[in-house]
Amino acid sequence: MRPKILKTILLLLVLGFLSSLLFSPFQYDETNQGYRLANDVEIEATTEAVFDYLGNSSNASRWSVFVNNIQPLNEGEVADGATGSKRRCFCSPGKPGSYWDEEILDVKKNRLRLLSIYNLKDFPVSMEGLVTEQLYEDKATGSCKLTFSLVKQGKPLGFFEMVKLKWAGYYVAKVFKQNLTNIKADLEK
Image (cartoon, rainbow, N blue to C red; front, side, top):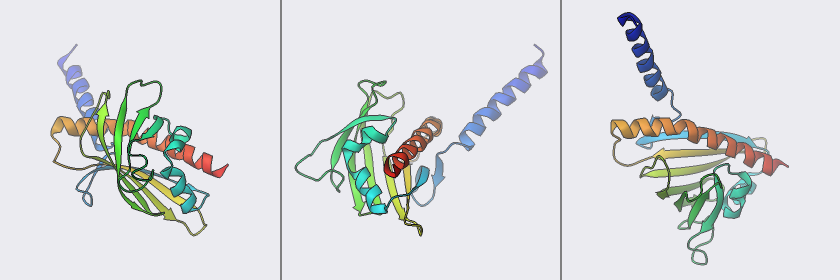
């Protein structure tokens, strides 16, 4: 091949790589001092109904394309879905042995549920300092706008960690979108 063609191919590869980072669903968020990815959906149900539905761990298998089941870890000590509640999330049968743990850090009834994600096992990509937000917003129509977000907090990321996070964002955004679609369908039937 001629050097000009090789340079063109190399330039296109570099531009494709940089574009994938630039347009990743994970973007730096000044408010949270970290990277944030978010998806939302409007559900024709009350905010209270949506909040209660997501607070019940046994419902996860109905709506999640990634979680097969959730096992409360401190059952009897703290109510499922309440601040301080801990649970283990097992992946779908296609990923046997993969799981992570969550702790609910904060709950504002019918407004917010904030969960830390830790102890990731058997994942090709793993990272510390992940927090998930479930935001619930009343709409004038009586419906609920539900937002799922994933935030990477903590120490600044090195280059390879940032690349890993940004590329994983494409998959996470797809999972969030499908999960939100499933929640909407289940609550609106």
